Image (cartoon, rainbow, N blue to C red; front, side, top):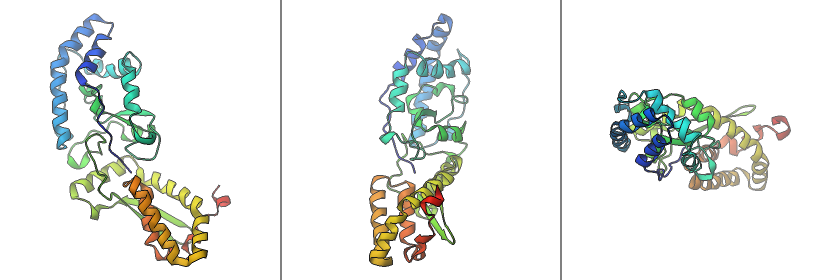
Length: 284
């Protein structure tokens, strides 16, 4: 589902001041420089909030020497399209296997402002506020700004939930197989459970994982059939449990281990219910 990232190895002060120096308008350049003490103080507040985490407690703060739009524009004007582009590219590519840390499924193609730049322009080029992600997660997250602890989405730089079992899959078998995913609330600390549910709902991960699980079942149907015909329900259950353990070892919070655990625990599936999986030609 999600995974943590190493904090970007870029200091905020030289990056911000580099963006200011690359501003051609001399009056704006001076104003950006004069704004640095407030922006620096806000960055320190961000780090304190991240350690708790309590991003919702940051609140907004008015600019003093520049407008919010001028601060936010540093991101597009200098970090994305200007002389600090190398920092943008390094952050965007700082992911494992090119996968989005918000969903763990799609390819990274952009950078998200964890706290939106429209509300918090002082964090527009703050490296620890810049999260590489897929375009779909960025779109679904939109201008999300947490209003309370439960409303805080997963932050890849400051949250590590890898030791927790976040997802649970549920299987229903009739003429076809329906797989749904939910947050495994009963296995989680309450403060993590409610945040994970917010993240799961905001980014519409249930539909994404269900679609991918459908494809996985079709691709693995022949394997299930061969295992069942060779050793029966017991052999299929054992194979599914081995698959679960293997998948969880690599991506503990992904939908794949949750799927295989649910399949292994479903007696109907192991006793022939796998036959309800669509044939590949029907699926295509």
